[in-house]
Each structure stands twice: as structure tokens, then as C-alpha cells.
Length: 345
Length: 275
Ligand SMILES: Nc1ncnc2c1ncn2[C@@H]1O[C@H](COP(=O)(O)OP(=O)(O)OP(=O)(O)O)[C@@H](O)[C@H]1O
Ligand SMILES: [Mg+2]
Picture 1: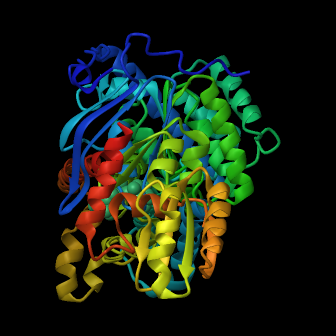
Picture 2: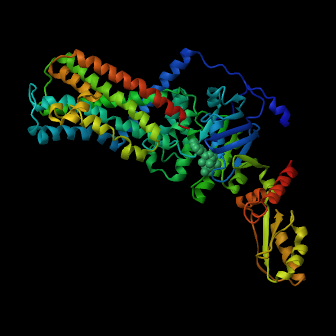
Picture 3: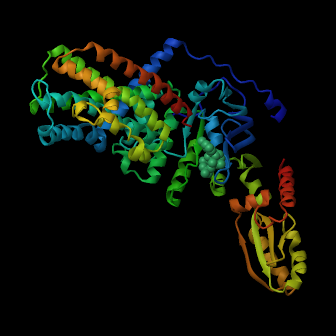
């Protein structure tokens, strides 16, 4: 089987990835407005954010494809601006667009990559074989990759980024566009990979994916870090499960809110217009749901559309930035987001 | 570690490898990418069509369809006039593949991936151009063979004939550098395919490739006579069929060197910026 990854870069004791105050603009667009990141060796950082948040820009800076306008970024202690060649020696990258060449077979793609990393003949042939096996591509190995499925292409692309056994791996949206089955397969492969000790920075738009794979999550929006923590922390403190209901008799809205207030981690959100109450119930979803029903019933309050849902990335953003329901008072809700952030530290 | 400690992290100071070692690796990378590009070319029916089948069709079309209507005054008649021109035109058009392939690799993540690897920055472009040189040599050889089959004969001996073929490859490579720039600047395979190479048409057709420039209207002659492709074709004809060499030789050299001097740095700049 494949030699353990992360075997290199023994000349550095600090964090595998260190980013401090990095800014990057494209003309008028501020893609990154001063972000900080620290990833200790062997950890998995999920960089979570919506379209245009600046995820790819961050990855490109860390992989020496773009120079930051300001700030510092070190990968295994190597400065991306001052020693880009040294950074390239220790990293692997699978970008948002695949690097698979469709005219070549899977094996050829891998062996040529090995040649470009200056591996000797035996090593590159052996490594190509091992990677094909590990990623379930043995049968397709000698067919041109033009005929590969989306999932196979992503797996091969990931394999290409591993040819040099990098100690830090960057994956930019590794499962975007895959069907659920291929996505699960990809998650499996990535999980095995990081159990071997590779440091991984992974970007995604899916909270679920960060949850599955990452030990720490950093949420960015408009080029700024807006939250950081484990998936659990983010879900319970930032989003958490949500219980929601509508009060039929508006006059009783206040009573209803009072009855369930203590079930919510934060002050319940009350939309007077639609008489909707939203509770943040952390990971106590079903218990809170039953309790809500019980208490409202005890007071004889009639509801519509009572239900619980898991937090989505939308909920995370909603509670952090206050976009959406509370647009009328963006200041107030942003303050609340900031308070929650502080609560995590 | 707390944030204050982290800010004091001092980056490692990693010396770059000695120049000789870098050169050795750079050559190895260029060779790898040359092989890669050629393998891709051989697997791609469209590229084969453009670089072999289409030029052969051109030879046959011009020789038999238009040839009879075009009066020329060279020894051996139109087929001898045509061949140096069509070899040059083919070499120039072969640069199509350069632009398309680079734009495609850029659009996919291939070039980004290469730029994030410990590889000489120049290797991608140099590998591409050496693969193009090999491709051009094959194309030129095929055309000349077809030319021989339809009656073409070199009139000026073997030495000048070989120089003519080399000059054709050099012309093709020079235009490949322009194409490389265009492909990297446009960055989109489809756009390159549909309008990225329109400039090749006036350059190759409004030239001495297929008809004597004197047969064109006066306003067109001024361009046709003085543009680089015509100048190189005039030199190739002199080499193939006999005639004064010197004037067109140095004019060709200046043009080709000038184009390379402008477009190689432009292409390199686009490659660097391509992130
Ligand atoms: N080369 C560029 N030129 C101009 N603007 C750019 C460039 N690259 C990125 N941007 C802009 O910078 C912002 C951040 O882009 P980035 O690609 O980093 O986002 P992302 O989080 O990766 O988004 P996605 O989820 O869509 O991949 C966007 O507004 C984008 O339009
Ligand atoms: Mg992106």
C-alpha cells in the first residue's frame, strides 16, 4: 500500500499552514480582505463559504498561483512569496477544474505526473499502480480518461495531486457537481487519506461536507473570516437545529414566544408579519420539538407548519451576518453574530 | 500557540538549488512535456486532420482545381510554384493546434496544476514549442511527399532543398509563438477556435503562397508584397527553384527574429499571469 503521506518537511515544527492578514483584490473586487488561518500538522481545515466568498483565491495564494497584495502566508514554514519553489515541493493541489488530460489514460496521466516530480522509473510506475488501486481505478487504468465518469475523474484528479506524497494537500471543492453516491465515495477516499496524517485544506460550499471531513471549520464571506470552530460548535452555536412554527391567533404570539423562550439557545426570532417563531435548539432538535408541542398545547395555542430542520449553510450565514429575515436591522443582527463568535473563543 | 507567538514565526530560508541542477531539471521537464504533447496530438483525430489531411487536400485542390487557371513563370510550371507556398501556408496554419491546446489546458486546470508544481516556469512553453517542431516536421515531410507524387521537383539541389524545409519549420514555429500568446490571452478554447486565429487567413492567403502577388489589385499588393509570410515564401522559392537568395534571406531573418522577440515575452507574461 501507499507509503504514509506527510513524511516530508521535518525541518519545520510550526503549523503546517499559517496565514496572517492576507489581502487580495482584483481591481475593484476585494476577494480577500485580511484573513488569518492556522492549521496544525495532520489536521483538516474546511474552508466554507458561498460562491465568490474568496475560497479559491485563498487556495491559489497558498499554492503560489497568485501573489497576495498584503499579508503573509507560510506552508510548512515556507513563505509563498519568498520561496514559492520550496512551497511547491511540499504541496499537492486538486483545483476546482480538473487537471486530467482527456486524451491520456489514467495510468499515463499519473506516470507523466511522476516524471514531472522527477521520480525514478520504478517509483513512478509503482506509485501510479498504488494510486490506481487505492482510488478504485484499476479496471479503467488503461482507457483514455475521456470515457471516465465525473466521479472517476475527480478520483483520478485527487490521485494526481498525491503522486509526490505531499505533506500538505489543497482540495478546492472536491465534490461539487457529483451525485450523492460519488460524493460519498470521494468522502471515503479523503477520510482514508487524512487518517494517514496528511494536512488538508479543503474548500466547500456544503456544511455537511465540512462536517464529514474537517476537524476545524472556517467560514468566510466577502473575503472575511466570519466564524471559526469545529462543526459541532458551528452547528450548535451558530446554526444548530431549528424549530419553527406559525401562531394562528396573532394575539397569542407573545404568550407562545414566552412559553418556548428557554428552549432556544438565543432569543427566539419572531417575525411579526407572518407570526412565525424560530428557535435555535442546537443539537437537541427532537427533544426541543416535542417540548415545544407540549408547552404550546398546554396553553391551548394553535400553530401551523410546526417542524424541525437541520441547519443549512444558509442558517449559518443568516445567524452570522443577519442577511435575510432581519434585513431591516442589519446592524443589530450583525452584532449578535459577533457576540456568538466571541462566545466561541 | 497563541496569536502573538504565531506572528513571530520566522519563515524558513530555503536556498534555491544550484543553477546547473535547475538547468538539468528544466531540460528534463521540457522533454517530459514534449512527449506528453506529442502523445496528446497523436490521440486527437481533429489535430491529425488539421496538420495532415487538410494540407494534403490543399495540395490536391490547388494543383488540380485552381492550378490550371493561374499562370506563373517558374521552371516546371504551377506545381513547382505552388509547393514552397503551400508548405509555408501549412506550417503557418499548424500553429492553430498550439493556441487551441494551450487554451484548453488553461481552461481545464492543467496549467494551474503545473504552475503549482516544482517545475521550471519555461518548461510548459518550451515543451509545447518542441512538440510543435516535431509536429511541423512531420507535416512538412508529408506535404513534400504528396507534392512529389503530383509532379513537384526541387530544382536547386539537395542542400537548398533541406534549408527550405528547415525554414518552413522555423516559420511555423515563429507563428506558433504568436498563437501561444493568442491562446493564453484568450483563455477559452471555443473562442480561440472560432475567432482567435482569423489573423492567419490574410497572412497566409494575401501572400505569394498560391498566386503571384502581381496578379492582385494594387492596394492589396502593397500588403501582400511586404508582409512576413510572403517574404519567407520568396526565400523558400529561391531555395527550391533557384534565384537570388540574399535580400529575402536577411529580411526573413529580421522578421522572424522580430516576431519571436515580441511574442515570446508576451506569451510568457500571459502564462505567468494565468492564475
Ligand atoms: N482573476 C480574477 N479576476 C477578477 N476577479 C476575480 C478573479 N478571481 C476571482 N475574482 C473575484 O473574487 C471573488 C472571490 O472569488 P473566488 O473564486 O475566490 O470565490 P470562491 O469562494 O472560490 O467562489 P466559488 O464557490 O464560486 O468557487 C469573486 O467575486 C470573484 O468574482
Ligand atoms: Mg472557487
